[in-house]
Length: 186
Image 1 (cartoon, rainbow, N blue to C red):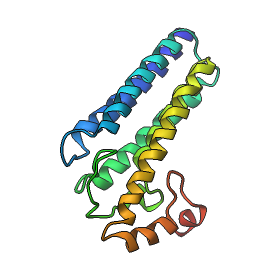
Image 2: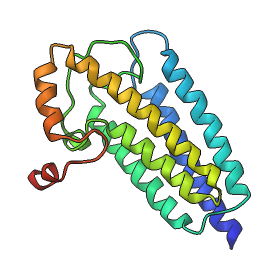
Image 3: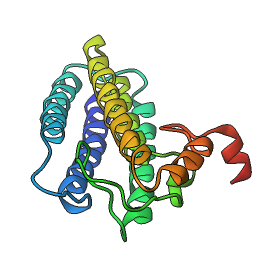
């Protein structure tokens, strides 16, 4: 039975990772070549995902079912963010564009960076899914990268024509986690 649960966890994670990879090429836009920061983030993601699969083959975590919940939540957040931004896709992380629009519907109503939230949920799912302390390297590293990328994006908004609108938006929507009062007003 252990092998069945390992396979289910691995397949669910692979679906998430594949969908996220599609997003890089199929949804997000770029103002030029893929930014170096995005290339490094993608390469690190691939290495860490390979590490997750290796760890998964050597020991499924006791709370693997929680991994499935996190992977499913991650896909849900990602899908709703795609739907909310399909007409105006955001640029890739680390792109040096100047923002020309502000998304504030769908999951953007509650969090300013729903894609990063989806990724964070995914990486925490990988850590919980394996029986290895090394599995926690991925969520720590990747969350730090997402915070860095989000902070850079927020600085772009702060220096753009949308700075006032973004300041108001920032006051009501959390960076990665919804603000409780925004949920109540929702």
